[in-house]
Image 1 (cartoon, rainbow, N blue to C red):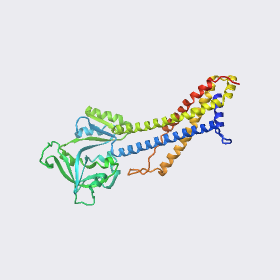
Image 2: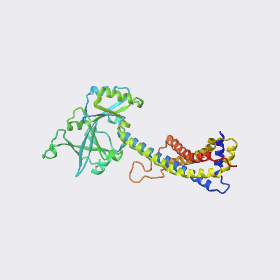
Image 3: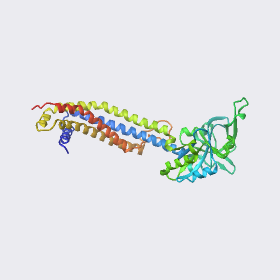
Image 4: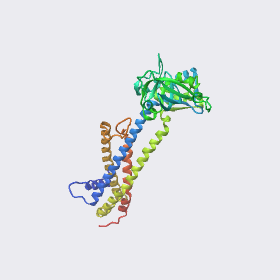
Length: 409
């Protein structure tokens, strides 16, 4: 341990003694530590809440979005044959492939109507997705002996007042005819119409629940005149580590006319926005600490004036000017470190309590009742490092003043 640090540690410990009355320097130092602790506490808690929100929404998207999604770049659908599908399934790292056909539709139940999207899926769909886990009523068995069934998003089901226990009423779907032209011949000339019995309801999040109705793809294809087409393919991976290899292999099979996206890429814009919000928030909190550092500058400047005699003695003993300045730079470092450390400990404790007991509730109707939190140690380290760094920089003007002070005995 070098001499300037030892002296700084002695000064710092002397400032925070509770056995004598504090002077103005000690009070300013305590305020500086408290402000560093408050900034550290706020930064770690807010970053953890944002992490929790990202994790929560990411988990919800996982329920709806596949490991890999293969979509056409220029057209609305891609045409596939059994040979091509077999080649994709044979790729090392692919567990299963499902075909999905999607179209906008008008849904009608009794006298109520709702615009949404009908999504036709094949028999492999449940092997590539976790949709069955999100059923709240009924079954995801779309094809049964007695006919075809639809699984409806909770938002649509509520708006249409769908009753799964009424076997006599069907959900009517009006789907735009593929080659329809604008005419005054009524809906029959521009829409394909069919009825299907409701067989289940799912709930993931409002964005999906208010839009989607699942039906068998074999029922939807004739209505859209797409005999062997799909809006996209959903691929389930057997090994997550082979994701990039699988993407490359699918592009090699289908060419440059398709995009092959993993889960992150499917929600890239959303993740970018969340990351921007996270670091913009951190930047604002760091700015608050930068403003608060003026209090630290005042504290250390007053300390330099108070320790004039000590500085002169140290210089007369041969201590170099830069070493004298280091004493006060170390003071800034210690104030920042102790304050940030106290704030980090409090933040970790608060996050633990929030995770265990949900102390702070979310207002409104959400998937969770309390704010989700996810503590990342890199955020803790970054927060402490930033606060300590700002405190070190705040100590530079007082330390320069100490270096330039003339010898006075």
